[in-house]
Structure formats: structure tokens, C-alpha cells
Length: 214
Image 1: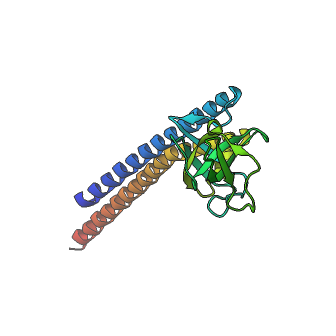
Image 2: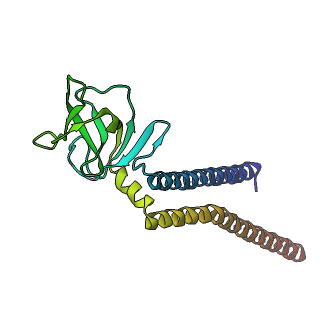
């Protein structure tokens, strides 16, 4: 085997090892984030906080299309608290009447400071109540299309088990695949060396026959 070929194989092995390390780090980070977030959400909900915040930022999955087409059912939103809110802002707030969180646009800021009139972009009329400032979680600052459905699934018991199983399978694959590749390469190298040895023996036999004939 030439030095160039040896260097190439050595480089491939190093690259494969680096990829394996990166995969394991990413998987560990994903598992840790999933675990911490699910536990945090569970504790926050048990404490009576339906939409927990992390450093003043809340996250939620949208379940209705009242803000379509800007925000659709199944989207994932990032909500940040603000010092003040103006007409046109899309906010998430707690509706005490229905006991759920709602994400609608501010249609009017009441001049007397009593609160805000809100309306869903897809709705024909404003909401039949005034939203007080204390009920506002924050303004929607980012929307991830379709991610909400995935997050909702992962937060469920079945989704959590599925996610852990997938992470475990990928981890096992990242460990076993390099071993399989090394075993295949070792077998191939052994076969090549064996074939080379046979060729040398045949060459020696041919030289001996030629000497005898001479």
C-alpha cells in the first residue's frame, strides 16, 4: 500500500471519528434540552402558570387559525414581554372567560388606559372583551411554521418516549457504524494481503520453473 493511500485511510478514520463525536454531542444536548424543558413546563403548570417564561420569554403552540394567514394552527410562537404595547402588535394574553391563552392583534388601545381591544386577523369582529395589561404575556416576536405540532407531540408522554427512542437509536448507530466500517476495512486489507501473498508465491514458482528449464 502506498503512503498516499495510507494517509487517505487515516484521514477518513479521523473524519469518521470527528463526525461520531459531533453526533453524540448534538444528541446529548437535544436530550438534555428536551428533558429540562418538559420538566420545567410540567412544574410550571402544576404551579398554576399555564405559559411559563424563560428569561422573560414564553413559547407556545398555536391551536387555532384565528390569526391566519400570519399565524396558522400548528405554528410555534415566541412571545416576549414588553414595557408597552401599541395598536397593530400581535400579543398573547390570558382570557379569563375561557381560561385559555389567546394570540390576537391589538385593534385599539383604549385612551383611558383600561386596556386593549383585540381581534384575530381571520375573525370578522373584535373580541367581546377588553384585555387588561396584567393579562398580557407578551408580544409575538417570532413564528416557526408547523413546529408547534411537533412540539406538542414531543411534550406528550408518547412523544417523549418516541423522541428518547429515536435519540437512543441514533446514538447506537453512531457507535456501531464506525466499528462496522473498521471491521469491513480490516477484512478487505486482510484479503488484499492474502491475495498479494499468493501472487508472490506464484511468481516464485514461475521463477523456479524457469530456472529448471534453463
